[in-house]
Image (cartoon, rainbow, N blue to C red; front, side, top):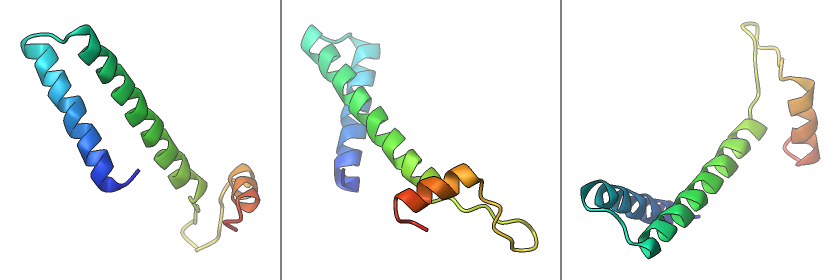
Length: 80
């Protein structure tokens, strides 16, 4: 999902949220809100997982102390 698409998604979710608070939503709008929210959460988790997969932990002396499990995942994905 491109940043522009993410922004559009966020704006629509916020619009529906404010409308829900002010006057309520129709069944169709409530369904749309649920679907958009799920899409947002899925996208967020994928981005967060990617950040974690690329994480390298270094101590004060500059030694790589990344956990072995993380190193293995990075190796499988061709990151290391």
